[in-house]
Amino acid sequence: MSPHRHGSFWGFIVFNIYALVSGDGGNLTASETPPLSSVVLSSAAFKPGLGSLLSLNLLSSFPEDLEISDYCSQLLLIFGQRYVAYVNCLVPAARPVKVCQNCFSSYGSLTEIFSNISSDQVGPGNVSCRDSLLRSDRLMLVYELFENLKVLWEKSNCNNCITKGFQNMTSDTLHFMTTLNQTLTCFEQYQQKNKTELCTNCKTDYKNLNVLYGGMEKNKTMCIDIEDAMNMTRRLWSKNFNCSFPREETVPVIAVSSFMLFLPIIFYLSSFLHSEQKKRKLIHPNRAKSYSSLMNIQDNRS
Image 1: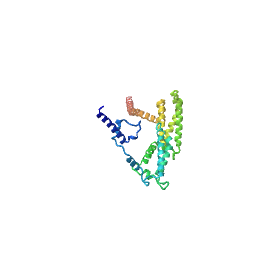
Image 2: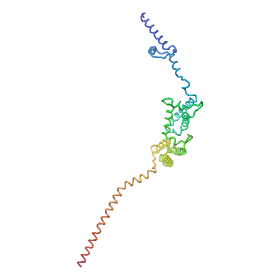
Image 3: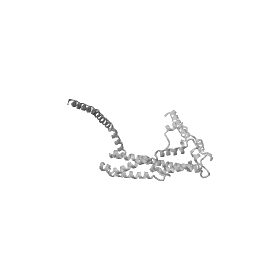
């Protein structure tokens, strides 16, 4: 190898060693050392020095009068924990829908801590956390997070199924769930057998469930859990088991429809009979007159 080639080789080695040192590559272990080609390419990238990192860390601290109090920090921590707990409850309850009956307790806890944050009442040290946690910036993250879940709760109509104070499900909801379990138990008992037998033996339970659901729908005392459970039960009854069940409200509809169907026939028939009767009334006087004339002629002849 010529001296010129030796010089180029050692120059290339020295250049890469310099790139490693100047790019903070001296802290890498042997297993972490990248290829020479990648080192050459990465050496041109910007890497902040130690001084810039220290300046960024110093900016993370503000004067004490701008920071929130320990009491507010504790409320914020509890809010985050209960928020996560409620979301973790919602996701498994998405299908089948059980967001009201499974997650009302965690939603009640989240509502309680948000009420403490948004309240005008002051905590230890005469401190109110409403302004510092809810209104201190344009984003208002805590408020927006809670409002999104509140809209979901109201859209699900969970207040119709849960008692005030988030203590338990209402009596109507518990009664519906009991009737639903009886119906599903009957389905499970006969679904492996003849489907006709299922339709016959489970007809009463299914009818009671429909009557109960109709009353709750009329009184507006049902939530998304009950609505989804009823839809799934009806799908099982009609599509999976091919059962039919005439609903009571269809009987008046059929009667009225039948009457309207035969109404034109009745109208034309009555019109025909009425016209025939008029014809008979018009003919009778002519016949009577002709008969009297005939009698007079005979009398004259005689």
